[in-house]
Amino acid sequence: MMAIGARRALFSAMCSLLVAACAPLPTPTATPRPLAPMRVPTRIVTLVPTETPQPTLTPTLPRAIAPLLGAWLIDLTLQLREGITFDDVRFVGTLSLDVQLDGTLAGSAEFYPAIWQPPCVTAALDAEPIRASISGTLQAAEGDAMLAALRLQPENALQTTTLRIACPDFPEGVTLSEPIFWQAMRAADLLGFSVPLQAGFVRRFSADLSGISGGALYGTLYAELRVNR
Image 1 (spheres, helix red, strand yellow):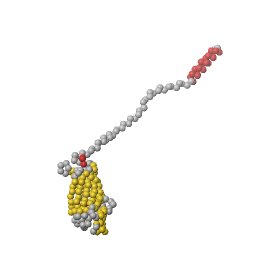
Image 2 (image 1 turned 135 degrees about the vertical axis):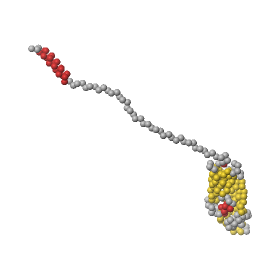
Image 3 (image 1 turned 90 degrees about the vertical axis):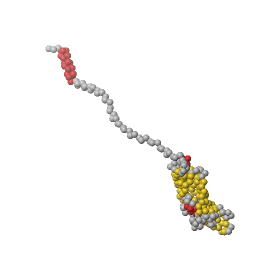
């Protein structure tokens, strides 16, 4: 018979083997995979070349034109003489011009009437001046000279000039209201004319006005042009 101590030892050994057999198997540890770098998609952008701005070209002016650029004044005086009733009617005005880079001209004009007829008492009764717009171009003349070819456009081609005169032999006086200025300008061919753009230049001429306006402009027109800067 086996001793009691030996049997206890055998029983303990068998229990140990049984516990070991029933114990759960160890969970296998996964081997970590090396980290792969994240791929970022590359976007290829094609730049459209921008147009290189071209420098603005300054027009080359003829040497004869360059000194003429800017403002000019043309003083114009009309004198109506030897009329039936009005012996000395005058219109004094100024044409203001500006010469542009392209050789064109633009401006305006104003004229004011007056009467000089002593010993009579005279008066110009219009409150507003006679106005016109001006256009034109520079034209080459002989040598290096340049002419301003001008055209006057009346603001009101039918604008009247109202004049009054009272003299010792007819103290009751006479009043005239007619578009005599533009009639005189047409008679003298001054709605369009050419003049050299030279400071100090003066031109004088005359024209016969007899019978142009049914007697109102009988006589002679004397005109003077004077160019200034």
